[in-house]
Image 1 (cartoon, helix red, strand yellow):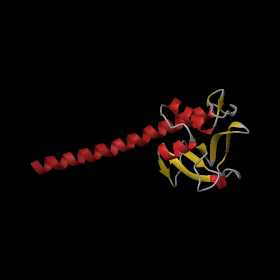
Image 2 (tube, rainbow, N blue to C red; image 1 turned 30 degrees about the vertical axis):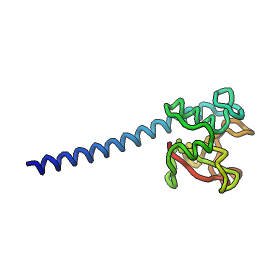
Image 3 (cartoon, helix red, strand yellow; image 1 turned 180 degrees about the vertical axis):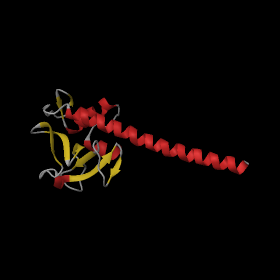
Image 4 (tube, rainbow, N blue to C red; image 1 turned 45 degrees about the vertical axis):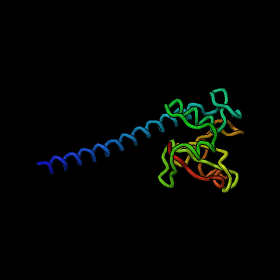
Length: 150
């Protein structure tokens, strides 16, 4: 009888962990979807160095603002986000994942964009403000250093 109880307990704990992980994924998908929607609602907002509001964004300001509106707190700069938020993604990039760029592969990330799906990313560009561009953009693609999921 005790063995049956222990087996049932182990199964319940295992299933609870499985469902908890499913909840974590669903919760992450909610934050990511909401952050992408917030970023898209700011298309055309001008670039402002150090900007973190709808009057002007820099790249990390847009990402930080979008996730804050979705209910998540991120670090301030692209490098701080890269080294301190989320976990690395090597394949199966999803909308809301953060894409990082650096002047050289050996340097710290200086730019961050948010993947929005279909090979596109949204970012605050110093020349065009908040915009959508291809992940294969001839300027950004060679500077890509990694992706993180928050």
